Structure formats: C-alpha cells, structure tokens
Length: 429
Image 1 (tube, rainbow, N blue to C red):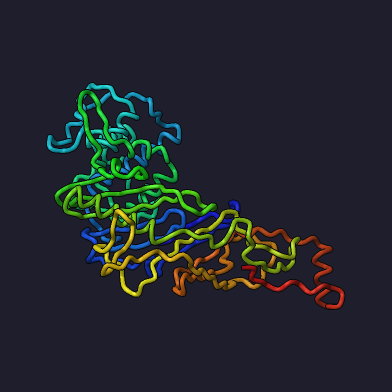
Image 2: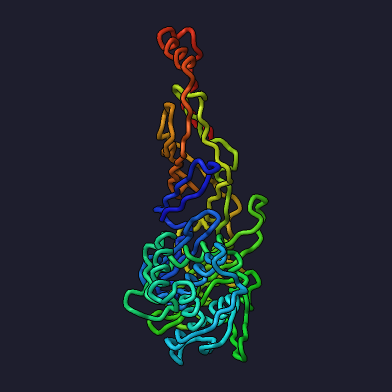
C-alpha cells in the first residue's frame, strides 16, 4: 500500500510504503470476521488487519462509492442537493425484498433526500436513481464507479452495479473500503452528516439506521452497513475522539469488518477493534512542519544549497502494547478499554521510542534542474521495531547560475584557494 502526502508546498511529495509488520499484532482467530482492517487516516498506517485484501462481496458498502460520485458531482457544480429528480422506470429493477425508499415513477425527490435514503435507509432505488441521473444509464455509471475506484488506488475492487447486489465480478476488500471511507471523509466531510443519522422517513416510510453503534457511542459518526447472504454482515465504521496531543487534538480511526454472522456481531467486532486501537496506539510527531530534513549542495545553481523542508507535520502511529504475545481480542474488556490476561490488566505503556535513520539518495544537485527525485529514505523504528521506510521525493526546481557565477565557479575549480569550500550533503534530523 502506498500513500502520497504533500510535503513541499506543491513542489514535492513524500511516498510511504507500508510493507512492515502490523502496529498491533492481533490473533485473527480471536476476531469472528472473515476479513477486517484498522486504518489511521492521520498517519496513513494500517494498524492491524486480517485478509484485508481478500476480494469479497461488499454488499451495501458499495453505496459509499455512489455517495462519493454524487458528492463529487455536487462539488464540481454539476448537481445541487436541492435539485429535484422525477423518479422513472429504473426503480423497477429493485426487487420487493431489497432495501428501498419505495420510489415510484413520477414521484419528485431531491438529491439531498436521495443521498439520505441511500446512506441511512441503504435504499437500492435511491442508488439506481442517482446512478441514472449522473451516468445517463446504469452501465455508464458503473463504468464511472470503476474509474473512480482505480483513481483511488482500490486495486482489489470491481463493481458491476450501484446497489451492492451480489453478482459475478462485483467485489471489493476491507482495505479498499477503508480507503474509500477515508476519501469520503477527507474530500466530502458532509457525508458524515448523512451517515450519523439514526433514522429517516420519506413519504410515510420510516427506517432506523442499521449501524446500532450510532446510539451506543457518541464518537461514532459513520460510515455504512451492508448485508447479503453471500457477503454476510459488513460494517465500515469510523469515529473521532479527543486526544491529549496538542499537535493532534482529535483523532479519527476507520475500521472495516466483512463477513460476520449477525448485525450485532459486526457492531461488536468493529467496536472492540476500534476501542483497542484507540487505547493501545497513539499518533506521534515524527517530523514537524518547517523542520528541515536534509540539505544538499547545488552545483552551477543560483542557490548553493537545497533544503528539504516539510510544509506539514508528519505523524506516525506507535503501539502502546509491549507484551511478547499476540493480542487475544477475547481478553479485551470493551467497557474498561483494557486487555486482561489471567486476571492481570495490561495497561498501555506511557513512553514510546521513535527513531529515524536517514539515508541520502542524492549527494548533490546540478542546475538547471526541474525533475522529481527521490532525495532520501527515512527508516522509522518504534519501540526497537522497524515500522516502515519512507521514501522522500521532491519536485526539484533549480535555476542555473549566471554566466559570471559559472565563470567564477570554473575559475575556483582551477584555483581552489579563491573559493569557499561548498557545504557537503548533510542530514539535519
């Protein structure tokens, strides 16, 4: 999994490759779900997972993509939430036993009402109505769904319908659904205004949200439930909670569980995983904004040094669990938020150690230059364990020195006593 984070004010990027061991090592046999993942959007790290890239039927988690595309159209000015649509015969593709708003051809309904029905009621007729309005027909909208999935890096996903009906070739993964959920929240935070609603009524039809955690935990505000016989009971869950970190006063986590056996089980599994992650991990600053990482000498440039300086603070998630055995979720007390083994409570550790080793991939730069280069690699260790390698790329733009400057540089090479010695490449962390 790769995550690209802007670090150089539009001139560069930091690419993080997550191929390391999990932050939390959880025994998968202690989690009653076919696949699951815990994702931290602030650090971009997967904290723990099991079968997270297995291709499975996503059921109504599919509707997150319908909402994503709809909100994208609204942001682009192609739709308004107040726009009125007249339902047509496309609603007849929805079968009587499917979740629906009970739209009938000729009825008027707004985009906002359709989005609410889509997310809260998980209405298949809302999904196909939005799909036809945006795509012109269902096949074109499905093609758009797959196009957007590809753009988001959802490599385990292929859609064949907008509602999440079980079909050959319609699949996704826990990792991809976490990625989609993160994109929804980051790009269209108003989605949470729909997903945190506990009930909705339209045209005399009332429906209570099937995410039962919305009423149990005030920090939970989404994302989507799903169920079919083939998929089992699925849940994409997110919450935002306060922290004691002044650099990050609030922290959001995303948990996706697929293939549980009941609506109560999917809620319990997702909530326990989320509570474990909140209590036994935290986000720490690895590199602060405006903190130089390294400096490189520049040959034949107007500037003699190029500094790699992040524009935003970079967080890393570290584990607060220091026991030698894998975590058994059956030993996690969801009320206290603590693991209890043989009557002994395992408290989260207070202090962690984050260490960075920096390797420079470039020893110097020669102007003129306008190119994306990998300048350094940061190897991150936490609590003595290697966590990840961070490849630092930058779009380097260097102007060539004037003719006089280049002449002086040439002369200095012939007569070294005339020039100051150039500063060598230097790590600043």
